Image (cartoon, one colour):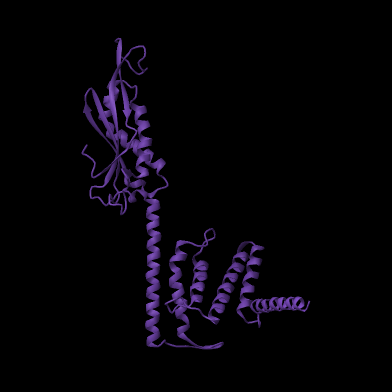
Length: 342
């Protein structure tokens, strides 16, 4: 029984120790402390959630300032340093809060600008105390010693390099998003054409252009009088170019690379008919000096049909009429190099 009560009392002692530790952290030892600033921050955000208009914005700004000041105070009481550097971990945390407060947006709290400027702001926060001496209200400005100046210069320079690399990452990510076809051009897998076995992945936007173009060309050629089709082929460059502009403007509207695609036809004679190659040509940056293009080939042949079954547009009065029949290869061919001359 004695052991039982002793275990109970020892458990109470453990809970009491935990409670004392939490109380020391949560309850400010005096009014002027970092806990007070954090509580003011929470109170400001609560009041801001209940307010509207410019009053809400003012209270929210005060909440951010209290949070930044309280965090900076707490992390400088017992500073921890980033491993292998002379940058306090508190400066990194405070720099992040300052960056979010200064460059965050209403919808996106963390933006690319927030991430890019974070290291530089953290370095500046680390450097500021070196220009002051004293504590409390007795503070004087000073010029850091030569050793401290060298250390601060190296620290700020390293953080600027980190920011440059972060900015480069976001720029490349933007390029890849807005210009996905830039990735499709290098047969050595370092950038653009990616081979998996015998398969070559071609730019999806170039495929979209041809897939949308072929049905419209077929509508203008299929079952039309042969004389009209031959006239259409004579003017194929203008007609295909106009169709391509409409397709690119409609289907690639969300991509900046829509200005870097061009559509052209290539017409050649074959036995009894014509061969029509539809090209979507990439005119943007390319690892290949000649660039690349995608091609779909169509075969156009004359077909003789009886006058009774000919299209209404056929105006011949003899017993038979000739109309066009078109067949387009369903596959898209990816070609590196400049397109053939017209």
